[in-house]
Length: 274
Image (tube, rainbow, N blue to C red; front, side):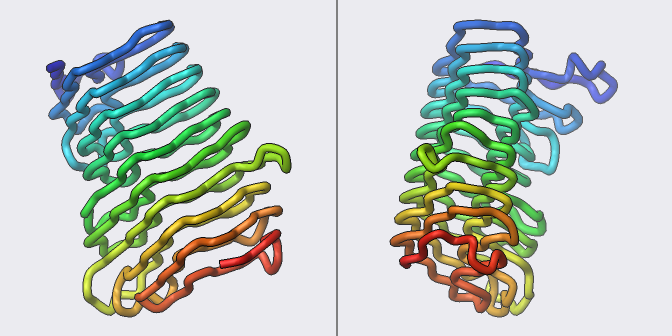
């Protein structure tokens, strides 16, 4: 078990449980990494590193809006598999120049604002993970992706978001372009977003897509009941810009008013058969 709690006036570079810089070929396995501090910006920082693996590690942090658990930048070939994440605001955050990031078979619990907030990533896999939180009174997006390129696979994940009384999104993909020969694949995911039994009208989305091209959305199941009067809620939301989105054989169920599919693009969807 690795635990570190810095004082509130510690220097910024001392406010980490683990700082990984310019490291290659290292595996962390069968560990518990915990922190009780909510003043630090990040618990674990990974920078300028490659071939780093976390396997069967439990990450335990306070449930709060701060800090972020992982921050990753300027790194290649990072693997997260069979880990447990508890608490913090954002559990895995990427800033810039990250490539070959694999997040498979993990369990993400009780995140404050996001389990994954990833931008500027080339070649990304998010498969067979579980995302669950009952955070209330917090605007959150469980998985938030932006500026993704190369390969993107998001498959067989499970999302369970409950009790929220503010806007929330299970999965969001924006500002990302792929190719006809290598489209992004979002498939076989199960999403449940259930709010309180009240009449509050807040925005809740199952999957939200905007400013993207060449994305295949196949065989996903989304169940929504944000509240009894969520006229703005959408099981699937498509923004105003993008192209070549294929939507096929999904099960989209919005029980709390709103929309099963909301298409703000006026026709960018390439093929719709649900």
